[in-house]
Length: 216
Image (cartoon, rainbow, N blue to C red; front, side, top):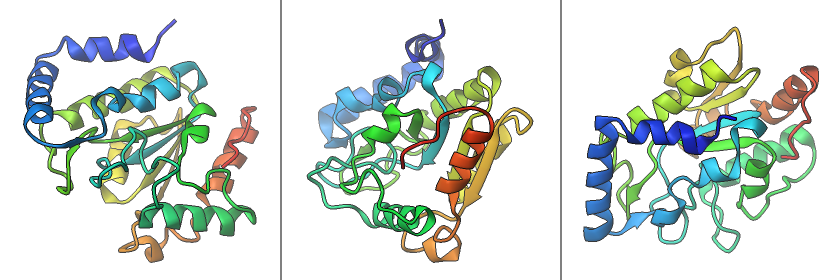
C-alpha cells in the first residue's frame, strides 16, 4: 500500500530536499520557526492517502506565536480565529445554512474526514510571512500535488487565491475536480470567495461519485 511516509521518503532522497532540510534545520536552531518541528508534516499524518477526498491549498503557515499547527488555515482551538479563518466560517454558514463543525478554528476534524490541508510552504519565521519562500518547499509540495494527480482518482481541489490557482497546471483535470476562488483573506474575500459555495459544491461532487460528504 502506498503511504505518505513512502512518498515523502522518495523526496528525501533528492538533492533539493537534502539542501532544504539542512537550511530548515539551521533556521530552527537560529530563529523562531513555526509550526513546531514535529508538526511540519501534520497534514500528511492526519489525512492518509487512502482516505483522501479533498485538497485545500494554503500558502505558508501562520507566523504568529502558537497559531500554526501544520494544517493549512487551521489554528489550535485556544487561539483566536485569524481573519481568513473567520471568512471561511462565514462562507460555510452562508453556504450550508448552518455553523461549521469547526467553529474554534481547529480543522483537525476535516483532516480526519479526508481533507488534506496543505500549505505550499511548510515553515515560516516568526512575524515574517513567506520568509521560507524559495528554499525548496515549493518543489516538495508541487511534487506532492503531482503525485496526487497521477495516483489518486476524483479528488476535489479547492484552490483559493492566485498562487493556489496557479497549481492547476499540475493537476489532471480529466481525473479530478478543481474549484477556484479568490483567497479568503479580508483583502480579497469580497471579490468572490464569499459566495463561492465551495463547501456545498464539494459535497455535491463527493455525493455524485459515491464518496461520503465532508461535515464542514
